Structure formats: structure tokens, C-alpha cells
Length: 113
Length: 114
Image 1 (tube, helix red, strand yellow):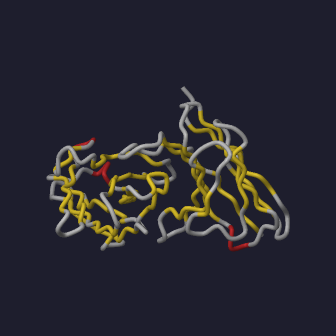
Image 2: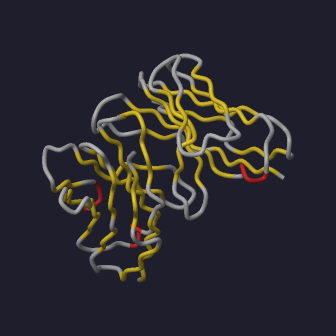
């Protein structure tokens, strides 16, 4: 019972490099999310997707792009990484509807040097 | 747009004493409210959620929270702290205008002193 799976778990990038964080869920959830976690700031929503084929900006979308490839997969892309994007990234999924909770992956620790 | 304020960035209690972690929310419509816990270097775990069925919500590990609409609050409590409760706690909100948008508060770090 995998739940939400993120890859990779750790990554070091040089400034200006690009990379894609992958996320997949096997719970048949409609909605998927990408957050970043920084000390003292909680989890901030980067982008979310209410269903396959739709994506919406969250609180901090600048510098990121997303793709909802199908119902299972939601990827986050950094086109030109900056040190300010050093963070822990969490993917989550959720069944649509009031009071349904989100389920989280284990996180990706990204360092941009 | 919905938002969450957690009034204390850090709370320290002695083992065996009560815990109170405060949360206030802003929401245009009927909110859904959640508390999550994150232990050091671990993922996020749901503690409890408000479903509008009852204003006092019981969660795992002896935690509970009370929804007070008049005060726009959803404070988390536990009668007696245990060492294993030391963690980061997040209050989370979504609302009727957009069930899909889930917003976290900044978190409260709970320390438990032996």
C-alpha cells in the first residue's frame, strides 16, 4: 500500500540547473498538491491540481511549473534553480470534498548551491 | 481567501501537564479544519479533522480540538503531555469556495520537558 510516492528523496543542484520532482499516488484521488517547507513558515502551497488536466497556482508559484500527467502523477519542475529554492518539498493527494484529508509523501530535500 | 494563524511559534510544557496549541482561521465560508503533526525528520500525520458533525473533535494520541465559529478558532488540546508529543504541529484550513485549496498555518513547535 504505497500511498503517495515522491522521487528523489534528496537532490543537490547547481544554480541554473533544471530538474523535475516526481509524485505518484495510488489512492485514486482527484486532487494533488505541491508544497515547500521552510523553517518557521510551515508548508506553503506552490501549485495544485483539482483533476487531470487542470492546475492552479498556490501561494508561492514563481520559479516553478507543474504537469498533471494523468490522475496518478503530478510533477514539479524547476527550470532554472536558485538558492532560494533550497527547501523540503512535499507532494500530497486528496479525495475531493468537504473535510477530506490530504495524504503526504515523505518529502524531497533539495539543496541549490 | 482562507488563511491560518498559529499564535505561538513555540510552546514548552512539562511532561504530565496540559497542552494548548492555538489556531485561528480566516475563511469566507464554512471551513474544513485539520491538525497535522510532524515529528523530527518525519512526514506529516493527520491528528484530527473538523467535519461539522460535532464542534469537539477527538483525534489520535489523546488530542482533541474545539471548533468555535464565533471566535474563528480551532485550538488543539491534550490533558497530559508525553515526551513523544514533542513535534511540530500544523493547523490547516480549506473552505467551501475551493475545497481543493488546502492552506497550512506556520506551525507550532512543541517541546516537552521531563
